[in-house]
Length: 445
Image 1: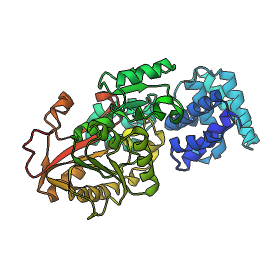
Image 2 (image 1 turned 60 degrees about the horizontal axis):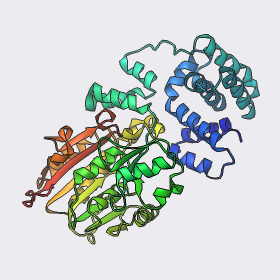
Image 3 (image 1 turned 180 degrees about the vertical axis):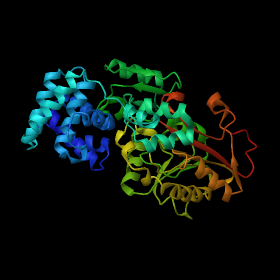
């Protein structure tokens, strides 16, 4: 199978609602493609998925029939060809055209070969420029950043223009690989040095001495430092959530929606592996991911538990701190999972009621004076501030608790906030701290 055909099949799968990262891992697991061809196919796959609206706007100016009338094979081939022309400088224009013509033939749409050739050559002839975008600012932003208008409007309404533009700009940036050094075994500087010695472009983050940025890390599970348990992958925004929980040595902590376990692992390391963390997850298979990760990292205080977060579990103890990182629409992570942006907003409309149900159940495990942290990896105000407001309306024994002073000026004076790429360089995220009853009198955060 050629790299372009592999990319086509991946694009087709994601259009059928598969997740990009899962589709890619599955496709390449037993693939005979060379590493170079895998890298090419992955870039083409992610690029076309990411730029779908932009590419369709371009193509629509060169075809005589409505896009929805085009055969799927022809439409995807045209998007792939156009992406190579506009965004892949290492692909010669003639190769992008000829390979697209060959691809559509392989897909048994030989009758469309002439049309594919003509469309792509006309795009080249016109200087590979986007046609004029007619409409209001949301339409223009939609085409430029390849994001549905209704999602842009929702973010604008919730968080304003500056934050919305930050998310849109970040959505087209390359994903970065952020690692959390296992402080029980190593340090950020030692981890970066080890990775660098093996040819990786690793550097310690300016924001946190235990965070390492490594943009060219591939095949993580076979990496020497990963196998030794020296790190786990975790976006910096997710690490900020752990800092908001601020777990202390010897405490009991419940992570109610824990898989795959990144926050659990970071909190266990912050606690010096002293105390107790009960890491809950609905499905047993995902609970196993937490167990395997904790064993690899050498964390003894993590107790994985298969549990339904929506229902009260009388067997769970009262905890000093409870983290409730609920299932969400994921609009904050579209940089790494570009297909999320195309899901209808209606799919997210039912989430706030589920999130409130989980948050309410989580509150039952919090000790008097204990802390409850609610978080999501989305920037939909209906899943964030409005869920918190609805919770506080019904639970008068909880109130907002300011973020710890050591988290810095951005968080000062707040007890809940959304975080965007412009703030810390990580994913879009939402974090809220709530205290039950009276605050601790022992100086703990």
